[in-house]
Length: 307
Image 1: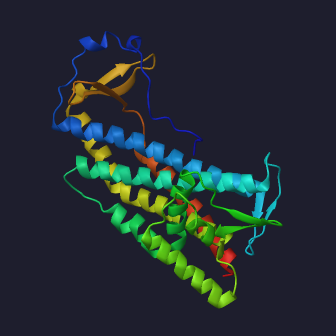
Image 2 (image 1 turned 90 degrees about the horizontal axis):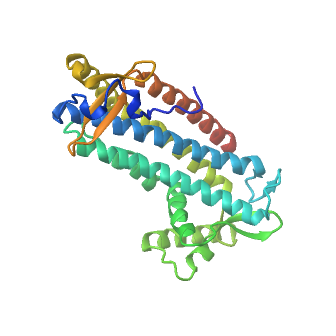
Image 3 (image 1 turned 90 degrees about the vertical axis):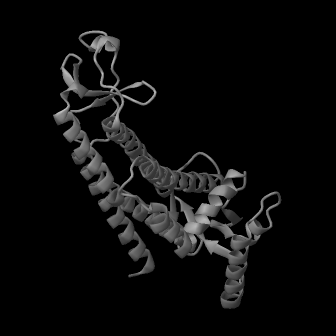
């Protein structure tokens, strides 16, 4: 798969055989809605794929510079230009921020589809992201820590000696930051369990929860592609049907006489869509990458768990 697939085509007025404002562009109607929806979904899909790659890049930056062990030890293996405490917090903050942004963008796209299309409807947030939030503490923890770090607090604590962990007591006692009652109760329960089982300070390992969180992010991304496919392919088929039956939507432009769809929106703005792109192939390639990445994450989790 190509490193970057740019589905946005920049056209200049001179790319057309005569002035664009003199071309007969079909008026906005019901057919236009399907094509305009496809244009926006395609743009958003590409953006989400980039956000996924940004999430992966932040994870790799952490793992390229540090080895994470089960016992709270995090050991440097490459210089990152600052103290380990600052580096590790920076990498973790960027990672959880990228994961949250990815998930929010996915939820936004499905919300847009529900507004644009009478059917089919989707319940992605309820069936997927809310499910993982309710079931897995690691996902709730990282969701919470993104807000915590956004308010200027560092999520990772260290007593020195290469030990790094999430300090529940410090988080609960942070001034000027309100922990909602549900999280506060959960943290208090975890603190009690840790003390009763280990007679130890209420801290939790970074590695254990990072591996589970990473697996969940990969599952959400793969589920997103699985759910989007029926909407995306339906819009592509509808676009092909419209263009075939209404050739007035097609214009030739550029030195290569590239065939583009030229369409108006409800505000009389003009949109141009490259009709030569094989969008189904592009989507299937994204899915292959997501399947491979998910398989690797499942393998890493099993190895960590000793299975």
